[in-house]
Length: 279
Image 1 (cartoon, one colour):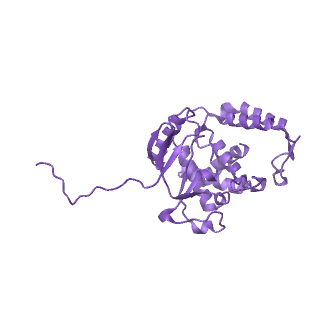
Image 2 (cartoon, helix red, strand yellow):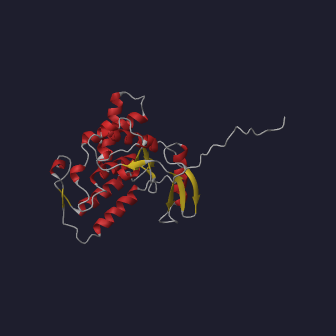
């Protein structure tokens, strides 16, 4: 039989009406790796769909959403969902170099700090951390600590995973189902969103690293307020409690290894908590 076209059949219009048009600030810096990563994330439904790439940028899916604020990431239901997103990302196998580079970050940060002409002779550690840390910290103390970490790298780098490396609230989207508008910074946010849907974005700093580095970096981001208009833009009083970090990591372990007993999950969570806290 000859093929026929039925006039009652109409083509579906799936062309998106809104897209994100990304322009790379540094066109020669890691574009191929980032494009590969974005493709894999889209395929796994862990990132926006990738519609096209071109010299100097890419076109990707627009997702109605809001970035999380400093207060949002502390909400229990959202924090638990972030831990699950961590677990999903850390289980990915991405075809990029599997050399941990977190020491490069540490060396760069330390060098920037050392070059600060207004650096005080020592830093005062908040009193509520005196149980776990010295009362003061000098630049030499930091240098000694970095050398200690470097000496332990041979063991630490045996277990590395694909990491985001920059997971602050601005890189976590709260997806707006049915075009709902969520109010950030609300104390009732946990009641408003019992099952929040999140998506991680901006993987330009991603690489393979110890998972403790990725988790520890996320906890460190709690102190920064990216919406602040005037200094100081950070406060050590916002560092998450040990209880909060344990619950976050326990949820992470529970999602990755649901078959483990509760005692085994607690044991693994405590070990990972110590590593993350030291990072």
